[in-house]
Each structure stands twice: as C-alpha cells, then as structure tokens.
Image (tube, rainbow, N blue to C red; front, top):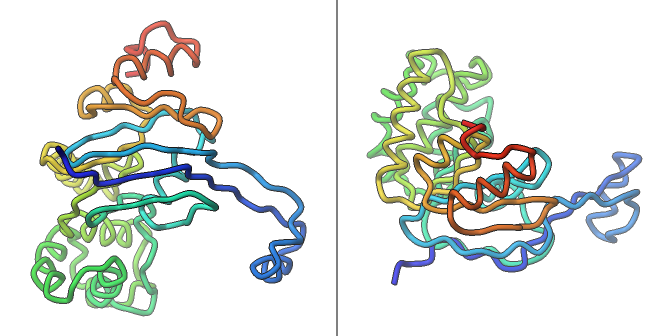
Length: 249
C-alpha cells in the first residue's frame, strides 16, 4: 500500500478577535478577553497517499488557504491532529521566514535549517538556488535591500530545490518578471509530474483537471466532497450556478 504522507484528523481552526490589541497577551495565558470567534475550519479529516496530486477547491473564505498554511506549518490548528510523513516544500507565503538583515545566502541557510534541512543539503543545492533565483550581486547583500519580487524568487528557489516529499502550493505558479514567471511555471509543472505528493489549491478547473487525481471541496469551513475530480468540480460549479465544470476553465 502507498505510504500515507498526510493524515488530518478532526482539524479545527478558529481565529479570535479583540477590540484592543493589548488584550492578545493576557489571552495567551487565560484564553479570555476576546470579543468574537471566527471559524476557519471545522472538523476536517482526510489522508493523502504518496504520489497523490490533490486539488483543493472552494469559494474564497471557505478555509482553503488556512488549511494549506496549517499543513505547511505556517499556522497551527486550534484542535485536532495533523501528521506529516516527509519533508514539505511550500509555495505559499514565499517571503516568510527571511531575516531582512541577513544576506540572501545566509537566509537560505537560516530558513532552510528552520525547515529541517541539513547544512550539507543546503551546501549541495546552493548553486542551483543562486542560478534559479537569478538576483545577481544582491544574493550576498542584506535582504532589506531587495524588492518583494526578489525575496519571492529566493523563497521559490529554496522551496523548489529542497526536493520535498510533499509540495503545497496555493495557485502560485509564477513570481517575478515575465522571464522568471515562465521559468518558475515550467519548474512547478515538472514537480507536478514527478510523482511527489502535492496539495494544490486553485480556482482553475483546467489546472485541476490537468494535474489532479482527486479533489477536496471545502464549503462553509467543512469538507463536503472528497473524491473524483469531475464529480467534485461539477458539485462545486453547480453550487456556483454553472451547469458544466468546463465553464470555469
């Protein structure tokens, strides 16, 4: 049987709202003082096998991006269990984890080690990252001198060349200028065909059909469908008022 790469059991995520920012600190201890609670995900459960490419679909605000961020380790669930068997490469929040005072080179080591990569592995991929990011002399300058696009290039290159077992992407096929967009799109599609486990959130039916072997449809913070791509897209598009999923290509 294929190895289970991701196991999610009874996952719930809530966001707590405060009328005053200073109330956040005592809340961390007492869990009191918030004015309201906004649900993002409620009682989510699913598993992803090795080699599966799973599309996550749903309207904006349904909880898709929150789910991806939890699986990528960017945020944490309120309750429930998430088990990840393997290394994760995340193409969401590409700018996260970089220190503005570190050079690009030092940031690759810094963020890479935060992601659990060894110094030896980072040494091996450094030249690939430098070549792919293509930011020239800025690579050895402080990140605070970078544009947002240059930081994104750095984050993208690290995620791609870390050779993850699991890739999580939130419809980020390309960043930067036209040349880099074409290069990054081609590299991402190469990973889609490589046999890795991939969780892909998208509003494009065409991309979901082209690459995914299964879809998870999130509606109202719950999973309402998990299975066949065409059936899931048809259900989603019927909810949106479309008769055929082809209308959303």
